[in-house]
Amino acid sequence: NDQLSERIVNMSTSATLAMAAKARELRGQGKDIIGLSLGEPDFNIPEFIKEAAIQAIHDNYSSYPPVDGYGDLKEAIIHKFKRDNGLDYKADQIVVSTGAKQSLANVAMVMINPGDEVILPAPYWVSYSDIVKIAEGVPVEVPTSIENDFKMTPEQLEAAITPKTKMLWYSSPCNPSGSVYSKEELEALAEVLKKHPNIYVVSDEIYEHINFADGHVSIAAIDGMYDRTVTVNGVSKAFAMTGWRIGYIGAPAWIARACNKIQGQITSGANAIGQRATIAALEAPKSKIQYMIDEFHKRRDMVLQLLGEIEGFKLNLPEGAFYIFPDISSFFGKSLNGKKIENASDFSMYLLEEANVATVTGEAFGNPNCIRISYAASEEELREAIRRIKTVL
Ligand code: PLP
Image (cartoon, rainbow, N blue to C red; front, side, top):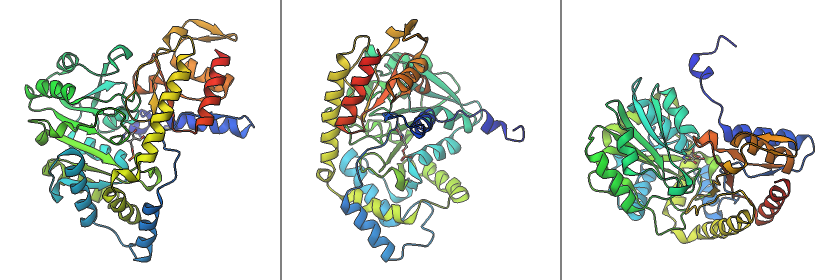
């Protein structure tokens, strides 16, 4: 419709959600589709978190909460940042939002002017580029490859910086690659940023706990980075609370204040019951959610082993999140069952139609040689999905 704004017409539809819709459509036609396209834990919310939410309802948490979050939730977030990340924030540096997605959108709206460049090491999470574009910024993709575990090198960062660079956005553990930046790697990137004091960083740490490597490092904790980093986190992934829509930031107070201001005009704050439940989630020791992390770890190893038996899949070892991001470019130019595979989208569509397995094309994440396979599914589903993939290839 030509009455719609250019803003929305120029926006791409989230590829992960589009794939889920296509899978649903095929299911509706009676096909037995295995969905490995969504970034959503397949666990139920832990009971102790449900209890806190039920209690909050009984306690009448039904009025507008403070725009930037309940004071005691902010205290729990401050404690979490200190305990897990060695970061000291004060209450005026914390803003609670409707999912980490809104946290990211807030930051984009308050930091980016038209034409400002935002460096996105690719592959990056699908929404980054469109969120940047809504704020009239210019996403600058820095391509990485499986050979260096999809991580941006300091040289690549340096080369991508221009006088217009305003921010760097990245996630570690990364969606879609599962890559985790080590302390040394972040220090090397910080060295480059030191020479460019006007560049700010968004560190998206939503997969922090789903990490099978040595441990998680927040770039804000690295020398010189605290005053120029927005640390984004939330409860969707580690606590299986995707539908509760709670995310938060720790940031320099002037950025937090601006996020609070924009949120005050757009949402009036995040939902009250979700915030109360989040207090219980963040105050719990990590041991309460370790069973989910152990399960993801087990599945990662199994999926890697099974995919490794399929010729043409190039794999690395993703250290976190719940995705495998194989390079499948060896299939490009080939015909499979009479269907020509020219790119990752063709390949992903072929798997959906022929194997009835839903994945997501890497093109959506800025990497056209790969597909993303989510292993947030049961062991049985994963085994069956990979058996089918093997058969149709
Ligand atoms: N950041 C990354 C890297 C994600 O993968 C996701 C969810 O898929 C989000 C942020 C958004 O999380 P939330 O559910 O808190 O909005």
